[in-house]
Length: 295
Image (cartoon, rainbow, N blue to C red):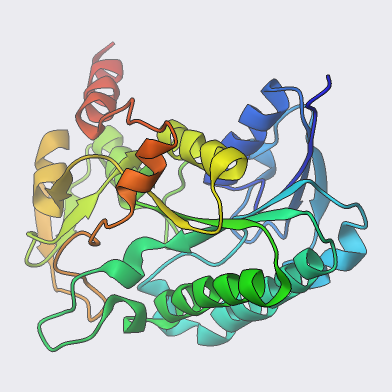
């Protein structure tokens, strides 16, 4: 096809990355995934994708091609857990992403779509800690966002930055690197209590993976040296989410990394102007889970 492109997706065997790979392949493009399988899974492999295993800091060795667009999703992505393993965050998010940016710089004309973290826009904690300073993860993501902007400016490179908001949907993972909706889903299906960190009023925006991928595709096609928040229209207190599932709820002590409210979503309008709109809601997703359980 005339408009067929070569895409590189780092983290292509992960939750969001696998859905993005699937979408791009269905559109007839050539897709390469680079994943170290730290949180990615071979169960997420999609037919038609060229999967290569390796660390992003070795990207030049693994990906000698020149892609039209790089989707850089392959980073460490847990806020609280990163407090325990800053060296791992530095390795994956700082060393790995620096290599990706150098790879991008060496290929004039290739566009980068960087998956930033909306945590940097979160309301400060009561003692004044800003979202970007909550943990090694949040700091690394905010720093890398600034570096992407600077590389684009210094070297006249095309890019977009996309911010995710608590993405949920098929292929989520639970466990210590898991997402809250999938953790709740698995506990609900097993009849186990849902665990909520105090005070329970902390709000988050939850966005379906298909809506997120749609935003990524639009940012890749139309975004120009700007930031785009791919966010659902409303936020939920975590205790309300647990109540949507139903069943027993157990309250746990608060964490030092807890954020009191959803990130301030200042850039959503930009992606909407480019044609993005929300198509899925959290209530619908949880309702389907509950209905399927009773069948």
